[in-house]
Amino acid sequence: MVTSSNLQDEVCPDCGIVLPQVAESGAAHRYVGASPSCWQLFSYLLNAEEPPVAPGYLNPLLLDAYCVQHHGIPSPQAINSVAVHALTLHGVFVAGVQPRNALWVRQRALRERANKGKHDRFYWLEPPELGKMLTIAHIVNAETPSARSTQLQAYVQSVWQAWSDRHGSILARWYTQYVD
View 1 (tube, one colour):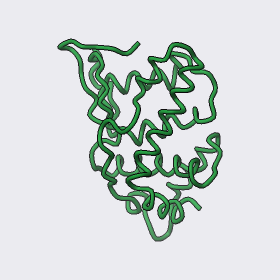
View 2 (tube, helix red, strand yellow):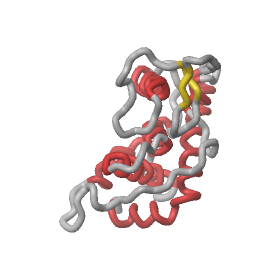
View 3 (cartoon, one colour):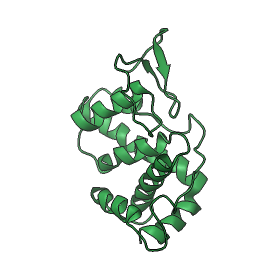
């Protein structure tokens, strides 16, 4: 269970989750804006399936939702990361792409175009306010694999909703330009 309240806690700057600091320095991603402890918790959930999550329709989008929520600071890598993962969510929720085909959207969004380099097509999208989305703590704190899957579905939807409310028209335009 993710709960903490001591002096060794850290707050994730992009989702607001409070977790005990991790001992390893350098445990954070270089452009995903998660705190080291949040990144570690996500990595366990994504790579080791710890705690286990039952199968669910939106499970393949955990990576996309997390990377959009953890937007980092404006840099070419962070801008591309948010754009590509947000376009993947757009593909599923708006364009009818099956979640199992998320990789297809990611690859299409980054393919080279004669008129635009990969770092020239997207720009920084101002993130929604903290507290507008669920966090991975909602997934991890659920009691059973089935409950965790339910929370994962809600998490992905909450991230998509917060970002699409703010940037839906931009994402639709980018999807048409770079994915369709």
